[in-house]
Structures are given as C-alpha cells and as structure tokens.
Length: 391
Image (cartoon, rainbow, N blue to C red; front, side):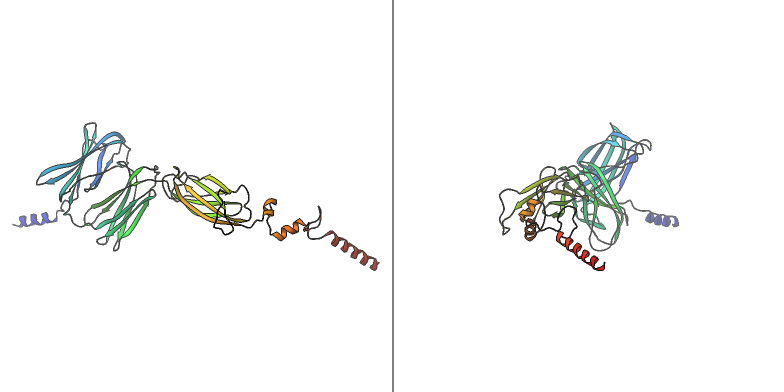
C-alpha cells in the first residue's frame, strides 16, 4: 500500500511535456549538420540548422500536419535548398503558410534535413491553434522598413522575455539581432532594432520578430511583415546668400543613397509674387553615399553674385532612380547694388557715389592711411615755426 502511495506521488512530481515542444533526432556523428531549433504557427515558421563542421548542398523538407484522433493530414509541404552551413553558425530558414479555413486543433511542423537522399536530422514542433491558453505577451503591431524594424508588445501580466529581430531575404535570414531579458509590467511598449547590413534598392524583404518567454514554460510568439527596401534621405538644414547655397542631407535607409541635389534660383518681382520665366542660376551636385544616420553637406557657388533683388531658391533631392524625395524652397534677399555688383565691391549707394567722386581714405601709393596730403603739409609748417621760436 505504501509503495502504491509513493508511486502516485512520484507521478505527480514528474514534469509534464510542454504542449509546444520540439523533438529532434540526429542521425550520424556529432559533426553532422542538424536541426537545432524550430517554431511554427499557422501563419509562418522558422527552422534553424547548425553544425560544428562546415557543410553544403543540403535539402530541408518542411511540412504542416494537422493531427486529430491519431490521424495525420498533411496540409502544406515546402522544400528549401541549404547551399552552405558555415561551422558554428546558425542558418535560419523562414517560410509562410497559406492555410485556408484553418480549424481549431492540434498541428505539427515536421522538418527533415537531408544530404542527397541521406537523412541527417529530423525534428517536429507541436502547437495548438484556437484553443491554446492566452500567452503572457502579444504583438500589437509590427512595422519593418529600410532602416530597421519596430514592434509594439503588450503584456498580459508582468513578464521577462527575449526578442529576436530577423531580416529575411526570400527564405534566408540574412541578419539577426536580439535583446534579452526585456521587462514589461503594464502598458504596451515599442521596441526597435536597426538593420546592420546593406539592403538592395526596390527589393522585397520580410521583417520578423520572435519573442521567447521562459516562465512558467518555454513558449514563442512571432510575427512577420513584408516591405520593399528604398533608398531614402532627408534635407535637415539649408543655408543661402548672394554667393551660393548649401544643404545638409541625412541618410534614412540601409540602401546606399546615391542621389543628387539640384539648386535653382529664380528672380522675383518687386512684390515677391511674380517670377521670371527662366532660372537666374542653377547647379546640380552629387550627394556622397549615405546610410542610416549618416549626413553630408553639399555646397554650391553661383556663377555670379546675385544683384540687388529678391530671389526664390528651390532645392530638390532626388534618388538614384531620379525619383523626387524632397523639395525645399526659401527666399534670398540680396542688398548688392548694380554698381557694387559690377565692380565686385559691397556697399550702399552713398558709399558708391563717394567712391565715384574720388573721395578715398588713402591717397597715393605709399601714403599714410587716414591722412590727406594737405594735413601733412600743415603739420610740417607748424613744426618749423615752433623750432624757429625756440632758437
């Protein structure tokens, strides 16, 4: 009787296998490539391949299976080529399911890793759709773009978790970064990460977030969104005067920005509302290559200094493909008179008139600045008189 009682207690204390479990079978020695981790829901999945030794030309077979009453119904099958597995490096494949009219119940992701037709490793991940318990965190919104990825996460109770951010090109995870031991206790919060790799302009990528909660059991929540990478930048500061202009450009994309700045000056009428038909001056300059958070200042000088008047300055920032990204306009008010403009000197009308009448502060080469010739002669005369009186 006592032995039966102790057996009953032992059965209670034995931990129960989690509902969201991955079971991996490795075939061969420890250096053989294997499936080290996998996750799936009814929207997407990811499978991680790992090896202590480099390998190549492998095949990864994945299938989504619905289980019910000891029967299995395969819904979707996807096959990926794994061209290279560097030593001690995770190779992650991501796929999207397209399940129409999904029913509540139990599902399994089954994955097999093969070299030719030789089975190297196989694993499966079990999950429940529709009747599972409420997770400790949920993803409210996910926005990936050419700079990085942002996610809004809400806790259902105070929780610690890890976030892994993935950049997916086709089915390959080409960049990943993570934040560990993130704490949430109440209201939703936003988290972000920047891509640490270069993107290709006009190419479609996937941004994926995978959250791992450890307590009371290890479980995952994931979300994936697509985006098209674009070269992007903005004008943050401009300067202008009668001699030229400049604009500071700030990079906002991991697509290398190889754009141009066009500066155009139009002369306006006296009321600053009319505009000449043609541009007074224009210049087009290449912007140095920019990435996210880089900035460069581009300067131009007008072919001629702007005569007195009011001018409209238009600055246009265009991308590599010639698409207009941003346009800025401002006013230049020049105080240079026509006379000053023609003679290359600045000043007002009265100063110009005095110059025209020959009134200058210096008279003759090697003269004394600030003194006229008459003043010098008067000083010499007074000095002679005083010298004679003393004598």
